[in-house]
Image 1 (cartoon, rainbow, N blue to C red):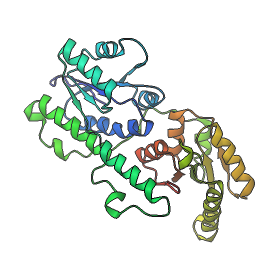
Image 2 (image 1 turned 90 degrees about the vertical axis):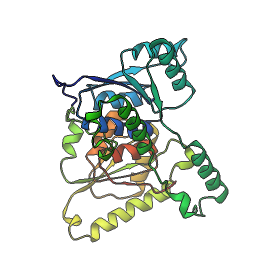
Image 3 (image 1 turned 45 degrees about the vertical axis):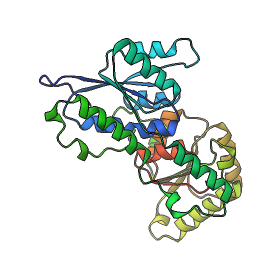
Image 4 (image 1 turned 180 degrees about the vertical axis):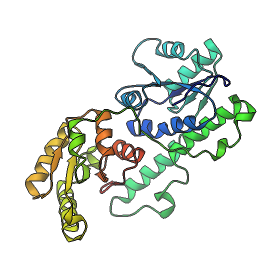
Length: 314
C-alpha cells in the first residue's frame, strides 16, 4: 500500500478521528480513497484508544498518534507530531480538534479541513423518536439520511486533495469510489479462526453500549429459535453445519450463557464475548455470514469487512 514512486512527490496527510469506534471505522473510507490516488501517500492518524488500535492493526504502515486530552498543552503536543504533514483532515470536528488545528496554523502554517457534522439533523431525529416512542415509526423522510456520514468525510478529503494535488493528478478524483474498510493483508490466523473455517457461522452481540438500546433476552431467544427453524426447513442449510458466535464484552458473555440455557442450538457455539480485543473482534466478524447486534460500533465494523448486519432492536 502507498508504494513510493521515484517520479511523484510524497504527500503527507494528517487525519484526526478519535471517537466513537463506529465513526473511526467509517473514517477508514478516507484511507480507501487515498489508496487509489496516483501518488505515494504517508498518513499520520491522530486518535485515542481503543479505536486507534483498530487503525494500528489494520494499517501498520500508518503512523498512529495517541493523545490524552487531559494533559496540559495537549494541542501543542499533537501539533508538534503533525508538523511535517502538508495538510490535516479534521473528521472529529469538536473543540479539542479545533484547538489542534489552530495550533497547527499558528505554529507551523499547516492548513486543515473540517468535515461537516450533521448535529442538528441527528438531534432532531433523536428528539422526534423519543416523543413518538418505539411503537410509532418515524416519518419516511427521517428514516434514512440523504448522505452517508462517511461520504461527508470523503467530501472533505476530496476538497483538500483538489487544493494540494498537482492538476494532472486530479483527473477522475470525483469518480473514485471509496468505502469504509478494515480488510488488511496483515492478519495472522488464530486458533478460533481456524475452527470457523468449517461450516457457516452467524455472529450475535447480545448487548449494547446503552441499556436502552439493548434487546430483551426474550427477543434474542426468539431470533435464535427462528434461525434454528429456518435452518431446519431449508433443504440446503440443513445439510450444513451452522454455528453461533457470540462477541462483545464480559457482560455480554453472561447474556450469551443465559441464551444458551433457553435455546437448544444444535450447531457449534463459540462464546468469545469478553475474550477478544477490538481488533480480534473485527477479525472474528470477518469470518461470519451475518451479524445480529444493536451496537453501532460492531455494526460499522461488520459493514467495513463486507458482512451483512441485522439490527433487531433500536
